[in-house]
Image (cartoon, rainbow, N blue to C red):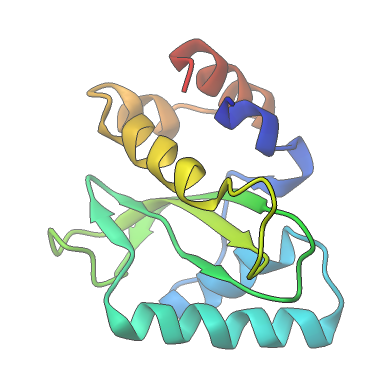
Length: 150
């Protein structure tokens, strides 16, 4: 299983417009192209998760994630905010890169935790934050995932 398999170009946004946590979460959710009711439910779930503790893992990276009935298979999205936003990250620094993961409550393939782990592993690579900042188009993000082989 490789991370690249889960991402598609239309679920990658390199210029998030939001200036706060809620706006960023809504923009990421919009990349999944769900109906309005599902988007609202998913936003509430992600907010609840963030209230337990920020998914900002440091190094400018956050991995908002949850399980929800609004999806029937694991879905992921990537967003970038070059100027960063306060996401209450563990290192108290602004977050620039957001990996959204949403999985159904019951998953036959059980990919939720492995995908979360692979994103965390990818994020720890020394050159990843700098390279993510340099991206100019979604294809380059997909190529970086392939190159890193996670």
